[in-house]
Image (tube, rainbow, N blue to C red; front, top):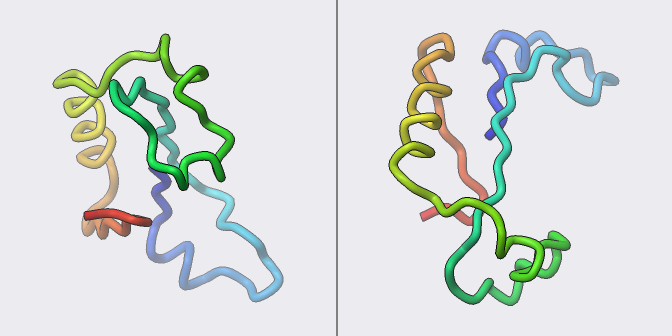
Length: 82
């Protein structure tokens, strides 16, 4: 997850690649099932992820805390999200 304040996006200069202030939460999980064929584009494999934690209630609480710590309003955008 990547969070950037709206005002930092609006005030970005045209030549600037990314806003300097970024909040990030990045984790990998054991999918406990076969990966989608498109996952190979990321370089992640079932073998690389087999010893990672599974997505559970504690992870949901961590994500919730991450979002709640952000300045309102929060807008979520997902790539290939449902």
